[in-house]
Image (cartoon, rainbow, N blue to C red; front, side):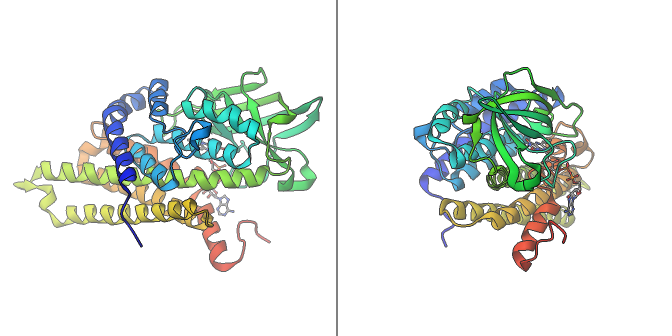
Length: 386
Ligand SMILES: Cc1cc2nc3c(=O)[nH]c(=O)nc-3n(C[C@H](O)[C@H](O)[C@H](O)COP(=O)(O)OP(=O)(O)OC[C@H]3O[C@@H](n4cnc5c(N)ncnc54)[C@H](O)[C@@H]3O)c2cc1C
């Protein structure tokens, strides 16, 4: 077992760290305060090659492996979960789906535009009445002349208001249940595609989240990703990459909590000494350090397996469950270390706390990850009760 990173991986990590500290951290607080989706910063992230990190160079990507991609996502996640979400959606949910399921024409048409940041894309699976039970899609796709007409509604869609391309999941044959779902590459520049931004979120205020109405949206026949009926499998394979990315971002949040807590505890004095000199404060920091390391190792293992093309769904769920819960806990503890100062946004721990809360909800809640892991351990599928 080799825990050393290669020279290239170290260099990519250092570059991502410097970029995060120099560009992202600077703007995260203001974007959060003003609930601004910072398209200029997104463009800079694209310029860095972070929107297509795992896409082969021939399609405009950076051609990096999953482990290296995870290092970038960790750094960006430490800076701002809102910007990390952009990477997770564009790279993991959308680009990885196109790579795995797309025709050569679809790859050549979409991937270079997505990797360069010329276009943003969204992944529209969740609906007002369909969350964890993703197979129960109510959005309908019906045959039309030369393609399909889609009607329905999507909910909580990251980048939904800014996407030029939307991966929309819809039911083509209700009798076929999840085998009737298809994934459509939707051109969002048509009247029937109606996004509406969701305001007043607890966190991720610097990220765009939208509900989307779909009224007779047209998709030509060559806009189906994979085969009709592949939709559910496409969604699950996308989430396998997406969960890895969310987990890596959460390792970054954990690390940020450690860094800020250590710095603050060494500077803040009470009872005539730095609070870092109190054993109970060190215990809080030690717990954060241990869980950060454990989360990182789980993410690295999932990346290692992905890079070797070995099965990794369970290991990815383990990493996602552990890292997201660890990050929620670390952010809470980091506020405790900061005392009252942690309750306002002078320090990033308050934003960490609000931003990271969603990570145990999206891309499969913690309960759904437990059911996936439990299914692998017992061989019994408790996701769909008998
Ligand atoms: C900010 C934000 C961004 C998002 N971005 C996207 C996006 O880009 N694309 C997209 O498609 N979706 C997105 N989502 C949606 C997200 O993936 C869903 O919210 C999530 O899947 C949970 O679905 P739900 O909210 O309907 O909760 P529900 O499924 O209603 O779950 C509610 C509770 O019930 C529990 N529960 C449900 N079923 C079971 C079960 N079988 N056993 C045990 N417990 C269960 C859940 O764990 C949870 O605790 C986003 C959500 C948010 C908040």
